[in-house]
Length: 253
Image (cartoon, rainbow, N blue to C red; front, side, top):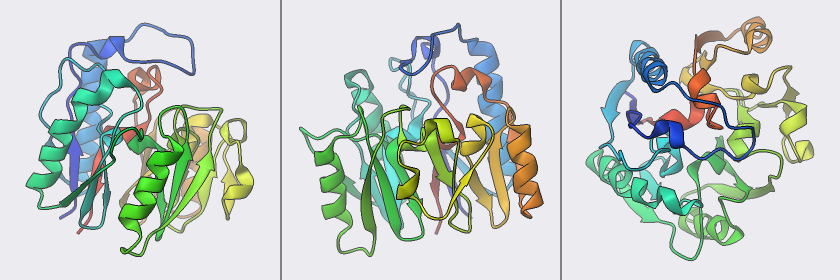
């Protein structure tokens, strides 16, 4: 059974970092209900849910994917680019280790956020952003060198993380909204989608995609392509530059 690591939103969620949009109030009660619905969608799709220990002093800790990235049986523990997020890492590492994963770490002075990592086949696209440094990308390249992964750095300027701009369909097609993709030529094949939130998909089954509920035109496109689409409302997390990818760490074995 595949496993998803998740972390419950903490009491300081509304104080999360916002960098690429105007701050608006976050409803913690609604956000908690949305998180529970997101987790239930994973569970209904056959995923075992493992909750990472809370990090209630860290407003952004619910975005657990930024703290650890999994490659087969290896968990790479990150070094978040925002200093306020450093305390998120220990709990994520402990949860990954408890799953029996080998642990590697991004070391200082490099910075690295998991939201900048997009895996497509055995290619790993990594966004070079305000949160992930070139040194961090090089460290990942070294870590993965003997494991059959090809690491490709991609400059990102328009959005917070690489996966704020693009994700990939199960067939390897990269999807993104044109206004948010700085280097569309870096990806092939590439499918432009009509809504920013339509850029973010999570594979929760062989032909099943999880995505935000506020991209109905894009959802229709995916269904026309033969995918089953599960839509969840994550409006409170979108206020914090979040999307469906960063709310879980998926482990397939």
